[in-house]
Image 1 (cartoon, helix red, strand yellow):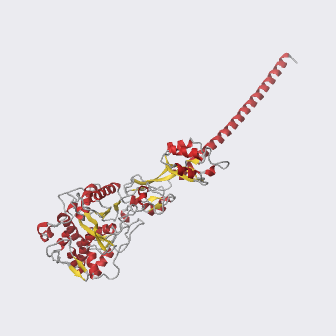
Image 2 (cartoon, rainbow, N blue to C red):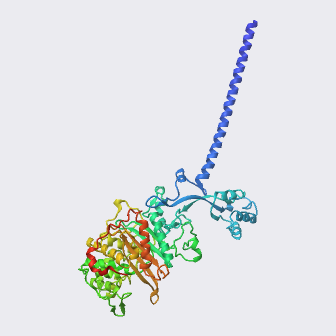
Length: 585
């Protein structure tokens, strides 16, 4: 074989060996890359699983991705979308001894762990923490902790001391509208207020991403609570209640019961005592004075009796005079709080708030017709409202006697909630149509037709006379300039053992504005006000409840689209000859 041939053969062999080596290396690299890729995928899958478990699971139960993005409970908002209640994910502190299956539940001694936790949370009791760390079951050490506190707990290195994230219900407005909202218990069930009414809606899979919209306006609510609080302070009253109601729809734009409670601070107990009031040992502050407590609301009933008599035709002439001498029926005597000076006509009876004059009007009307009017106004039933706590009226049963008819006409012998009164006054001024009150924001198509209680002409007359009471009578201190307020005072002694307690009054002012075209009813009530320097030593509604309305109307009117206008008013010129001098108390 020639040298050239040998050289060619060697070169070819070398190339073949080089190609084999190259393919082998390439294959080895590919296999290595595949192995590395598999390890990377496994690591990524493990990482994603850890993230998934960390974000979308709790207590061994996994949530869907949609669950993770959707709060456990839907929001509650006011009529303008302002958030009143929402869910918030927060850290909690738990001791879970079952997490350590082998060996003792704690790495360090119980004493060391307890001291470390008290250093992080100084308000915790060392003895109570020690007792809880001796538990064989999971124990809640603290409901809510801050993220930086959670980091300090992690640094303890105790697997059994855990800080899981738990849903928490937050009320951004604090105690505002607390009696409207209620609160959520540790089992995530709504209690007391609209949290209870909307419980199923707020927790439903399809609806919890949608807010429950209420009829209240936080701006109006804040003003009402503020002025009621002022009225309480000025008169040293034990409590207060108030409501502002749309006369044409029944929507409640504000509802307040004072003292209030903070729904962010409730503790688990048999009767759900607010945490900041737990030392009092009762639930008075959770109790709703507007919808759940019934009161004899006194002279605020007089316009209702007059309207019923106008409607029935027993009052044909507003100038007809009625005597004001005491009326004795059996062992009962009906008299006025002070001398009225002879006979009074219908406008004067309301302006001077005469019990005897109203009794004569009711006597002519008769118990059957007065009772029928009261029933049409819902006075014999629990108030129409979504709140679960609704008081049942103290309603005279059977056929009303003559004395019952007379006393009911001026607000005694019958007890209702302030909400009953607000709905009745809405019918009194809106043209005569009663509608149920609601805390839901209504669409135009949802506004109920209601039922007619008074004739439109009767309602027009009542608007005149209610305005006269504020201009010339006991409601003068509610006369907010330019807002054409009309209303009636009522001061009633509270019943007790052995009769009425002269030292305990319920003072109420029921009003509407503007009287030339009523839009809203405002009711303010003070429970057991005292005569103080601020009220000139007086306890009656003219001196305490009426001023509350006089202060709140100018604050809420412009927000509600009602601007003051002193060039407008309801026309009362045809009634002016009936009130010589236009004077009153």
